[in-house]
Length: 269
Image (cartoon, rainbow, N blue to C red):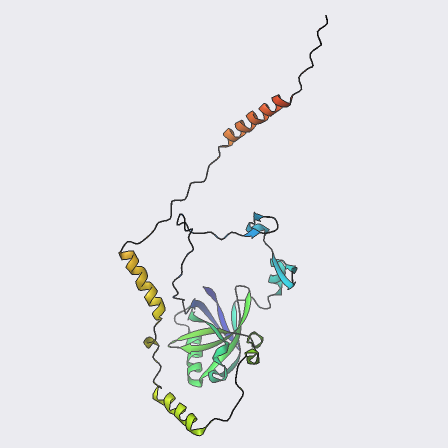
C-alpha cells in the first residue's frame, strides 16, 4: 500500500508497507424497503437543490458558524513538509515510556530486497537494545508521528497521535479524587487481581457478537431467506439524429402556430 524507505543516520533501507490489521465488523448496506435496492449516497447542495459532481467540490475549513476558508489542492500540497516517501527515525526510546493511548494504526514493513542486510541489522539492533524508533512519515498527504519496532521477525510501524490530539483527562467528569482506602480492601483487591492473572493469550478472546451475527446470517442463507435487488434499468440511449429530428419538428410546429396570419379585408355591401 506504500513504497519508500526507512532512514536513520546515514542508513537507508528501501521498504514496502502493508496493512497489519483488518476490521472484521459485519457491514450492512441500507436497502429501499419497498424494492430491496441498495440506497445510494448522493452529494446534494441544499442551497442549489441539485446533485454536485466531484469537479465542482472544493475544500473549505469552517472557522466560524457558516464561514469558511477555501483551500485549493495545490495550496495544501505546497504545505507538506516532507513528501519524500521516507520514514525518518528521529530518536530511540523505551517502549514502556509511551502510553498505549498514543498508538493508532499498525503497518508491516517488508524489505524491497529479501536479502537486505540493513533491514536485518536494524531489526537485530532494536531487539537487543529493547528500544523503538520514533519517526515521522507522510502517507496520503498526511504527516504522522510513528514508532518503528519489531514484531515477530518483522519490522512494524505504528502511527501514534501527537500530544495535542490526546484530550486532557481533566475533561472527564465524575472521576473521583485521590482518597484514603482501607488496607484490608486494597489487599483483597490485589489478591483478586493476582488470582485472575494469567499469561496473555490473544486466541482466548473472541468477538462473540460478530460470531452470533455471522451464524444468524449463515442460517438465513442456508434457509434461502434472501432477497434480490431488481436489475438496474438500462440507461435510455438517445439517438442523436432522432433527437435532432424531434427537436426540428417541435420547433417547426411552434413556429407555424406563432406565425402571424394576414388580416382579412372587410366585405363591402
